Length: 276
Ligand SMILES: [Zn+2]
Image (cartoon, rainbow, N blue to C red; front, side, top):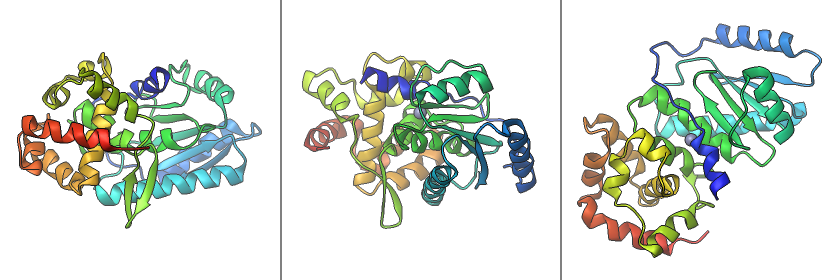
């Protein structure tokens, strides 16, 4: 659990810089540059949507990953995001932990603290060990979209929404996050009565979220899942973005029609009823 938590703790978000989404010509120039740089080393380089994708799996496998990226992007854009990421990002897909670590070192001089993958705004890259599956990829794809569309989003929502889609399905044409491995992180806190209040979660600082001594990812994720499961997530997102209160408290209380204090026991009871 702890190791898994580190996966997403490593996700980095930086202040958004104002620039336009990459043009097709810019994407093609970057792809050409990478093809030349990586020639003869077993990589496939391609373009999809606003991204350049580089993979060291077979070309067929890379194509299937690209289809996954397309599917995630189509659904999250439809439900949440008007703007595509406003910088040219490359998605690096490494086939296993060995090539992932070697690639992070070779291309970014990084030694990842997570075995699964990370988003680095600084390097304009999503760097993935795709071997264990695509859940981290769908998580990380949310971050550059939040960065472009809701740069003031607090960490709880940025990570909560990204974590919601770690085990995504399509339901009625929308992205649907299914209950995942993070559930015990939340329910154990409820049972032990160590769960901080929702107000604490929503008003915590960036450092307070990433360095929390409780499972802040699970808490934020399941708050987003509660809203999703009750048909309120998109409505909440719109109200949240429009609200001057960027903790989310005002928007959440408005959408729920009750105070956070009133909602807390409802949320806890719902969480304890979930099964994986
Ligand atoms: Zn993340």
